Image (cartoon, rainbow, N blue to C red):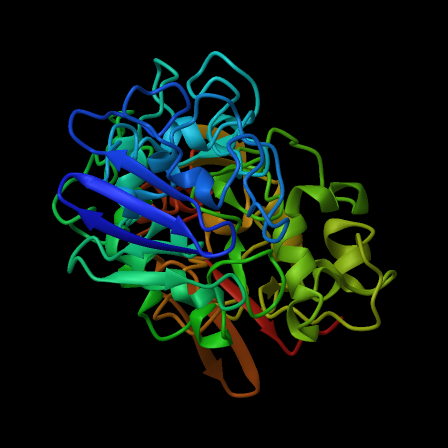
Amino acid sequence: RANCSVEGNQYVCTSTTAKTTRFFNSAGANSFADGDATYDGVCEVCHTQTVFHRRDGSGQNGSHPAGVKCTMCHPHLEGFGAIAGMNDCISCHKSDMGSRRQIVDSNGDGTGTGGDFKKISHHVYPASGTVTSSDCIVCHDTSDHSSGVVRLKNLDTGEVYSYNPANPSTAEPHCLSCHDTDGANGNMSPFSDGKTIGIIPYKAGTDIKASWDKTYGHKQQGLTCLGNGNSNTGCHANGHGSNNVGILARNLTMPLSDWNWYTAASEPYYDLCFNCHQAYPRVTKEAILGYRRGGNYDTRGDGPPPYDILNIVTKFRDRYDGSGRFYDNGGFFTGYSNLHYFHIQGGSWRYRDTYNSSIQCIACHNVHGSNTQWGWVHDTMQFNHYTEGADQYGKIDAAMSVLSNYPTSCAFDCHSIQGITHSWFEPANE
């Protein structure tokens, strides 16, 4: 819509439709805003100031806040005047910016309302409440910000990735470049909140890349980091913040203060896992927690099942018949047990090695990846399956005291009291 050129210290634009020419003298200028002594309507050759669309009515419509400088959102204008504020992420991404996505709260700091960083779980939110633009550029490359594409950095190599929401795996190299042993290329506290990854309660932050590359896990099932919690996307909503702990797309209640036995009413606590697993018959909530009503796991064990199914499916189960076999352990709590059902709210666990909680899925399972075939549990447990004739059983081969340590972090370590135990699971004898 215009022919523009630089002539000395002037930026010259001539409208191809109205045949008008405007000049901008860049010497000493600090903004393109109306009223600037050196402003002569360069941007307004094609654009209005109050509604950001072309003067011919085409293009994007939306309210344009007063006093916002063009270069805040259009860094390619650098050199032709206002560069002040061009990297001011906070000013642009607050709630009064019309159609711009709100990321910080309404005041651009911690004194307003809303914004991703003020949600329950977030990557950065300082005690002062002031998220800075430097926090944003830890992860984001802004050299071509006005292109409309989210550009993410590899913190180790400096490579820039164009994130495509339709292909969430495009964010994976960025996520893993920070969640590795050296954090953000050696910086373990990259944000202004001063929180340090690699130490409690953020110890797991440096383990994720190594776990992701292990033999078994969600990666091998086609998942990635970001997504909406559905199959073949990812578990984490985004890198800014979420109303679910762990920046998760769907809820997994942690820490969990419900110490009652699991019932169907407890399902929302495990929404992330159960919602996704419904697509995989062997790991649905019914398969993991259910057994036959009136069978041995009911009448000789844990009582009525939360899900009544024809035959028990999970291999994490135990029978005690008093047979004298060395893997027929002497009924520490029950005779027959669906051990998932027994454990899931039947003990004390330190979430993030800090917060007291009843036992959750991630207490035993490394959801990012494991070299342990059986259930993808934490490798420190050294959990294995064994065969003795027609019988099959499982056993934790690590020293029982290991379970008190990170990452399993048992707050009350029953296994150290019991000593070595076995889960006799075949034949099920239901």
